[in-house]
Length: 257
Ligand code: ADP
Image (cartoon, rainbow, N blue to C red; front, side, top):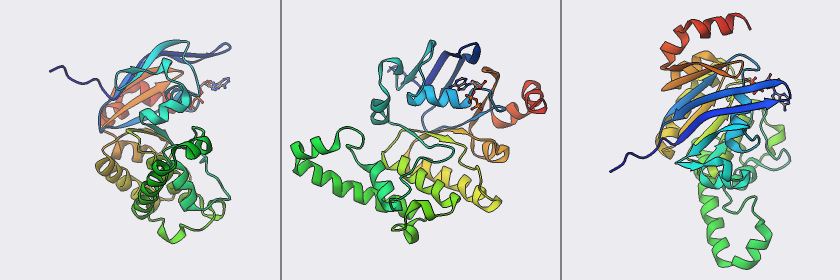
């Protein structure tokens, strides 16, 4: 039998903003159940690449495939349904809603697809899916140690807790690939250590892959199977964390920052 394609294939992706070349033909792959680090100095193109995968940005050239499907033909809202989930550096939660409500919003099978109209048409099916969503939310609140704050409004919680809520919300949609944008930002040493263990546990329990943008080098090298490094929109290294960290072009890029 033919070997299945990698979960994600980024192939020659080019993005320009006016005269700025944000991505200059970047290629790499993310395997099934792989934790992949994405590093590079500020302005190297990491966020732009995330945006291309999640559909917020359209490459001028190149292609991104998810389970062999060319994403250039898949609109943004449909990418979540394909199994691409994302968290944001500064979180994108409903601040006045509770933790549980935010996680439920992520779990809702019809979230973002004309929910009310569908609810009227589908009746019973929606009620069953609602119960399943509640069960998923319960499981995630336990996994991420959020049970004690489940009924608190998100906006009043410490930033580190909000980041766990954001992770729970993204997981609730059942992604096969999770794009994590600086999950360690603003966390203390102990929280970063717990996050590393949590990422391994999430991969194991949800059988998913993770693409991780992170400045916290120790976290990246301790959790990633492979790391890809960018500088000025070009890939300058790709391999094991040890090999990438020892690569002269990577050392130069960080010294120049
Ligand atoms: P990183 O996430 O690695 O810090 P970005 O992807 O944010 O890098 O940025 C890559 C380059 O593209 C930078 O030079 C940045 O200034 C530029 N850029 C990113 N987004 C835009 C935009 N919307 N308009 C103009 N330039 C942009």
